[in-house]
Length: 367
Image 1 (cartoon, rainbow, N blue to C red):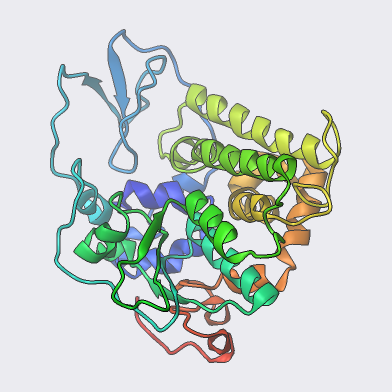
Image 2 (cartoon, rainbow, N blue to C red):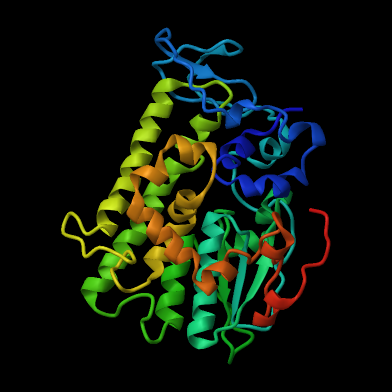
C-alpha cells in the first residue's frame, strides 16, 4: 500500500496530522517511506518537449516541462483531452472531477444561532479561533460540529447545502426569533471571518470601523487567501514532500514562500511604510492575524524539515515574535482544539457546544 498523495502534501507542513490520517489507512501505509521527510533534493535534467513528469503514486502529475523523470518515473504523453481514471487510496476515491452531494444526510443542529461545521485544519482553525475570541470578548456561544473529510462528510446533502464547494469550514446562521426561517449560509474561511465580524463584533475589536483600518485588514485577509496555496499542497508542500524531487519546482515554490515570509517580516518590522507590530495592524489584533497565523504563524513555530529548509527561525525574527505572541492568546489555544480529533488528547475537542466543553475530558474514540 502507498500513502495517498494528499497525505504526503499535508504531513511535512502539519506533522501532528499523522495520527488523525492513520485512522483511515492500513498500518503499512503510514510512515512507510522516508523520502517525503528527507531534506535531500537531487538535481534533475531537461526533458523532451511536450512531456510531463509523472511521479510514482505518492504524487500527482505535474506540469513542470523542464524536468526529466528521475529513476522510478515514466514519461507521460499529454493527451489532447484529459480523462478521469481510477485512483488508489482514500483520497483517490474521494476526489472526483464533479461536484454535488453523494449521500443524502442532513447536518446536525445545536441550540445556538451559529452552527459551525469544520475540521481543525489551518482553514478550519480560523473560524474556531475567531469564535473563541468573540466568546472572550462578548460571551458569544456557538455549536461546532466535526466534518470528517476523510470519511466524505463534506459530500453529504446537508453539507453541500451549506457549501456547494464541499470544503470546510462552513457556517449556518439561524434567526433566534424565527426558528422556521432559512439560515444564512456562509462558506469560505475568509468570508466566514468577515461575516462574523460584521454581525457579532459590535465594538469593532477585530475589524476596525474606520475605512482605512477596515480596508487594511481586508487586504491582508485576501493576501492570505491568495498566498497560502503556494505554501500548502498547491505548491511548496507538494514538491517538497514528493518522493521524486524536482529541483526547478522546489526552487520555484521555495522562492515564493520565502518571499511571502519576507513580506510579513518587513511589514511586522515597520519597513515599506508599515507601522510594524506587534500585530498585522500594529497594536490591534484583528481577523488579519487570525487568518494568517494558522498558516504562517504555526509554520514559523514548527520544528520540521520543511521549516528548517525554509530557514524560518534565522531569517524572519519578527514573524517568529508575532507567531509566539498570537499563540499565547487563550482564545487561540482553545480555538485550535475545536473539531480536532488527532494529536494529544488534551489538544482535542471533537465537538463544541458550550464553553465548559473545554474543561471536559475528551472520550476515548477510534478515528
